[in-house]
Image (cartoon, rainbow, N blue to C red; front, side, top):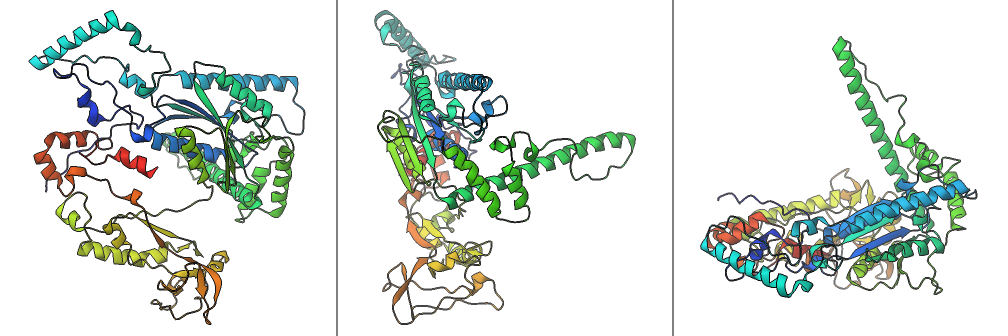
Length: 593
């Protein structure tokens, strides 16, 4: 089998067209004035050229930074938008105003200056020409062919010259001005996300939008500049669950501790390398050093991690975590008391009609409840949908390729073939690996789901994975299941090696058609306890493999021989190439969204 042609990516997803369409945009004798920019792909529909400003607000330690970063990745990857994050905390020029003291005149001047600086940078970003627009040129620009050596090319050049002259003489007013914001089809749109990583220190900043007046100022600042043409959306993160807040805080402190340790390790390594360089020149051996004295690290910076002046709560909590995985109750109480001081002066988005003219989303307990107002349009609804399923807790996702199929053996594309003998063996080994490595995380029983596509090769790969029925109370135990559940008539024992781990002691249950899926049958046949079915299989057609259209069931060699031009285009632009009557990878991004 000959090696496949080398595949190169087409670059950023915010290109206005894919490379495999490039030949269709060149002038020919039959089409001397071709379309300069084709219609957008499905993932970018409704977003082309539109400017959005998303302002993430809320009380401290609600996960605003996390949500802003996740949202930026989503909008870039799935919608091809040009996204930039603006952290309000980075624009504060000096020590922030503490919540317990009134703002002094010099503080107000500093707040005004930092707000003006962020506004300037925001407008520069929104007004700048996108990378896609710079590559595409004008939406009515007539491309001039290079190296006109063939008769066909010369005929096309003459036809284009005549067309340009006609346009200049009779329809000049139809051309779109270079600076006109209506040129939406040459720009993938821009999204500015404003948030703060220091909710306590930047509480009084204008762009923090912690009051009705600050939100009104932010909306008017953007909307008063008609040239921007930007839409403002406020995203308020509300967390009223003490458990969620403590989980957020614990995650943040652990993250900062990892950053601090990384900074210390880098400082130590850099210092040691510098000393080794100096001492080696003099032939002196250098002993190892645990840290570099005299240089501040992230944990000891004067910024205090956004907790304002006074007691360094974050440092104290981080120090306590050195010896335990839990924050001491005393520090938790101190944190809640400090946040409550902000809650007394923070003003949430009002639902009394005074802010009904604003576009906003209220995200309550990360999707438990979502309130939207004036969220009309394609992108706004996609943002609302994405935020409704976001969560701050870590989730592990295991990805497995399906076992070898019969088409894989033959080198054929697509189809719906069963597994080969090697693929069946892979399915059996996968079923042995899953309970030991996925059911239990760090020794604790964890809820798991199983997703496959609708193709039989993926369903057959997962067919041997057990689906044990577990009492729901087992997941509340810190040590997972320490002994097997009670046996019923529908159970079968799994092989249990002597001295095995909890996953080995786990008893596999065959799925019973007579039992309701959410209850466990006791010894007397009474439905008495809610249960969870581990690895409950779910089939999603959106996870199906790319559809090769007319090339389904063909090998790459057959495509290369029968359709060399199509094979070349696919090698040039794999992500944007669409199989005839089939899909491209951009189409897959759209259906995964």
